[in-house]
Image 1 (tube, rainbow, N blue to C red):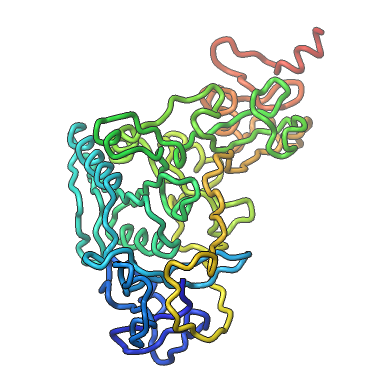
Image 2: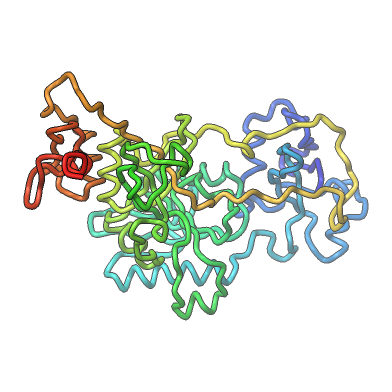
Length: 419
C-alpha cells in the first residue's frame, strides 16, 4: 500500500495523508480519485515509483502500475491508501463468475414470473449502470446491484442516491457479513456459492437483510425476551422489533432470492429504514413484508422508507496523519501496511426498539379513549382485528374485549378473582 499517487490528468502528486491531498485549487479531487475504477479512466492514478522511472514491483511482476484509492482500517484510524490494479491488459475490475451467474439468475427468474427484466441497464443521466433492472406490473423498478467485491460506503451511498433520483429502488446483494454496503442502502445477503451452483438453480436463501415485525406483550408466558430488561424479566409493556425469519415466534419460512425478486417488484416486500435508538440518520436498512411495514408506520409514525441523507459512521471519517509521501513502490511487501479485520456488520440481532408503555391501571380519562397507536399495537400483540380491542373492566389494560370468544376482563383479573 502507498500513501501517495500521481494524477496523470492534472500532472500532480497527491498526498493521501493530508486533508487537502497536498494539492490546492482542485475542488472535488477527493471524490474524483475515490470513484470506482469502472466509472473512470483506469490510468488516472499512477504509481509514484513508476512515474519517476524507478522500479515498480507491481509492473515487474507482470501486473499494473496503475492504482486505485480505498479507505483502510488500522488501530481505530481510517487512512486513505493506494493499491495497484490487479492486471495490465484489463485494468477495470473484472466481473467474477459468481457476479455474472447471480445477475443472469435474477433476470431469468424475473422473466419467468412475467416481469420485465434486463441486465446492464444504463441510467438516463449516464451516471451509472445497474446490474439488473426488474420492473413490476405497477411500474415499480428495482435496481439489483451484485457486489461481491469490497466497495467503499461512500460509493454505495452515491450510487444509491443516483438510482433513487431516477425512481429506482436500489437492492444491493452481498455474500459477506462484513460487507461495507450492509445497512448503507437496501440490501440482502446470500451464501458464498460457486457460480455453477448459482447457475444450476441451487437454493439461494436470503441470510440477512429481510425481516418480519414481531409485536408482543411482555409477559412471563411470552417466548420472546424483554428488550428493555435484557432478558432478565418481563415488563408488561408491548414491544415491537424486527426479527430474522428463523427467530420469529413462530418461525417464518426462509426467503429465497426468487421470492425477493418477485415480491420487491410487486410491492409485497418494501424497503424500510429503522433509525437507531439515538435517532438521526444512522440505523438499519431492511426489506420487510408490506403489511408489517404498515403496522410499523402506524406505531412509530415513520413514513420515509429511505433516509434522504446519512450521517457519517465509523469508517466514513477519513484520518489524515500529515506525513511525507513515500515514492518507493511497496507492492507485494508483507507487513508494511496491514488493515484491521473488517467488523461483522450483519449481526442478525433483533432491531427496532419500539415499546408502548404499560397503561396505568386507573386512568383518569374515559376507558373508551384508546389512541390509534395503542389500538394498533394491542391488536398486533393479541393477534386480533383492531376493532376487537377494548379495555379490561377491572384494570383497564387493553385486551380482546369484543368479538367471538371475547371476555369482559383480562386473564390476570379473572385468575385473581377465581384462583
